[in-house]
Length: 93
Length: 208
Image (cartoon, rainbow over all chains, first blue to last red; front, side, top):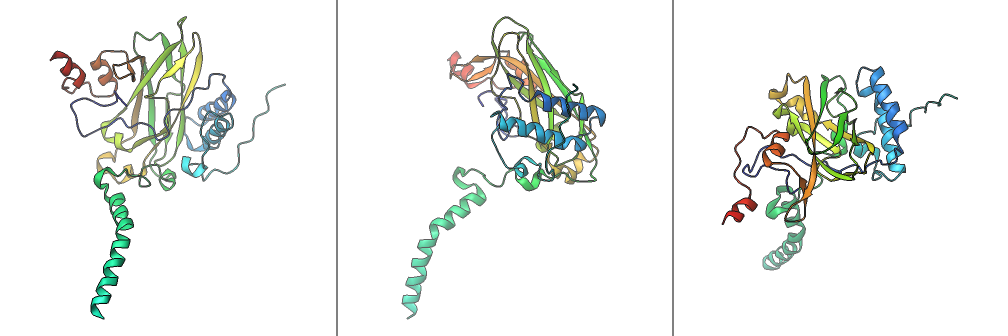
């Protein structure tokens, strides 16, 4: 990074870049459905992340399928303990 | 007999020295060998520590006044376990009539949590271009390293605040994108507001 560190400090807190860089922008909202489901789950569970991990796995799976994220093993992303996918909610008729 | 044994042994060592040197370099990082495979993102580190004390991560969003975007977090906070990778979302909307490129910086408070807060993937430090009027969701995948449980200084941490600040982007002399704002504004957004800074190399050289 050309700007990401204070000019006079040699050691200490370095704003470390994320391991995989930046998520490409989802300009067309292709994974918006999975995102909405995840946000609803968070709301229902008072923003505790553990019950909603399967849905976050779904969201990342959607991103991988649409080419918005590099494919990788689930264990490298920390989702090895989650198997399968959450049941997709049927949209109301 | 003895001499030939010594000769054979020396020959063997010279053959083995190349891989041995490599192992030595990888283990100690001598001569700038990058630390691969010993990083914070190994699969074993990304396992939630069941039963550990939950940490509440609050989300904050700021933007520079020169950037006509609306930038908000989609959730006020998430409570996570150490070692558990969690997803969070921000939304950004370009309210202007032109396509704009923004670049985000982030900061984690309190400072002692910062070494344990790791982002697997996010939307910071790289340019994000939004077309005029476009609204987009920006995800962030992060985790708090489980070593935080072993750190006595972090024993009573219940709340962590993660702040993102979006700036307009401009190209500097080297052609890299950087925030289009005063240096002290950028440093404050990264939590270095209270520190004195030496002038950057570019400004020092300009004055000559």
